[in-house]
Structure formats: structure tokens, C-alpha cells
Length: 139
Image (cartoon, rainbow, N blue to C red):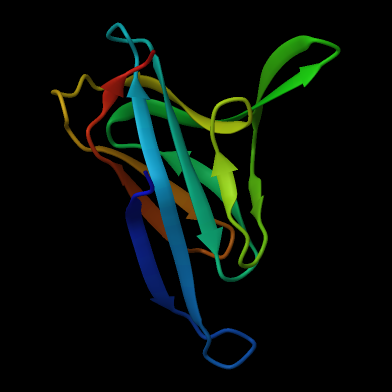
């Protein structure tokens, strides 16, 4: 089921003459750690109507948030931290299992079905807070 979690419109004066710039977040899912002090994970899809780049992620509800990428090479799975993610104009970029994802380090314990917040910052200066509804334990 697809959920439109957050969509923000930003009125920025673009070189093309006052173009309205939008950022859309879909399918936002947060998996809390199984134990307090552990690491959670966040998945979503993001689409920007202009080319941009995610340059930072954070949360008031966690010690830290990091962008990670999983890959399989020669039958071996590996995960590594990356500093930024390109957002091609008009094309969704998926954060999900087995690929890009956000690692949520030492999140504050949340009551069942609480909203968990992660803020993304873009190279263009835009920022967006993603509200992950109904946080569930990692499985």
C-alpha cells in the first residue's frame, strides 16, 4: 500500500524563471530497534522535480542518522556509509532493503504507533522532515 507521507512545495526562484520546486516522499517506513539503544532503519521513496542531492540526515528522536547502501559482490553482502545521494529531476529514488537506507542510531524509545521524525537536508538548501507513522520494531 502506498502512503503519501509528506509533500512540500517550495517557492524558489529558479533559473528557469520562478519554477515551483516540489519534494515528495512516499512509502515511509521506520523499523525501531528490538532493544533500547540499538539501531533502527528507515525506508522511503523520494522524488524532487529538480536535480538535487541529499547531503545530510538527522533526527531529534535519535543520537544520529546515517545514509547507508547495501550491495552484494561475489555472493558477499556488505553495507557501507555514504555521504550523499543524487536526486535526478523527476525520478524517484528508493530507500529500501538491500539498497539505500537510513540507519537510525540509538533512537529514543517511542510508544507503540508513535510518529518518528527524520529531517533530510538538500544541497539546494531545501530541507524536509519525514514523519514515519506507526513505528514498528525491526524484524
